[in-house]
Image (cartoon, rainbow, N blue to C red; front, side, top):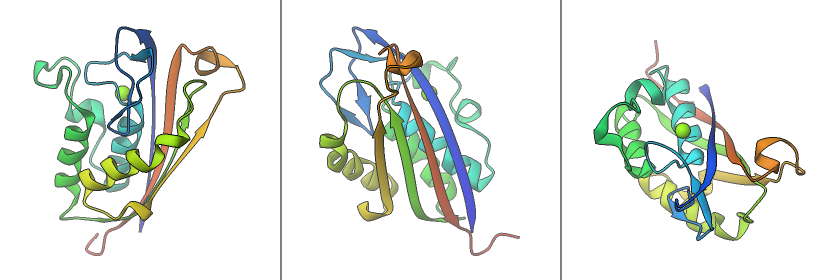
Length: 159
Ligand code: MG
């Protein structure tokens, strides 16, 4: 078994849709990024890559590469799963999203459905939790959303 950990933060700005876990949250602000800015999926991707020791999201999908401009991060997640699927099975994913507004919990089932489908794993292996930042820091001020993720990988053939 191997553990992977991922973290990401994106600025929250006017004029962008807020996409988290592949779902449009219908919020008045969205996350700035070269891709769709899906901070939750970026943290999960880095956790998967870390656990499999395959580098990080910036190495695989550089933000200088025009082919990733505006791309759905679900596509990046599928690409990463394709890289690790021959090596590892995902035992579980646990993620925390730090977001003052909007309330995320009502959308968790939909988000888990999207992520589970992209990874080809059952939804009950995925846990999402939301925290406000008690008004503190950039997340608390509504200027950013951050996410933390851990994954457990089962690598039966690891050396
Ligand atoms: Mg990111």
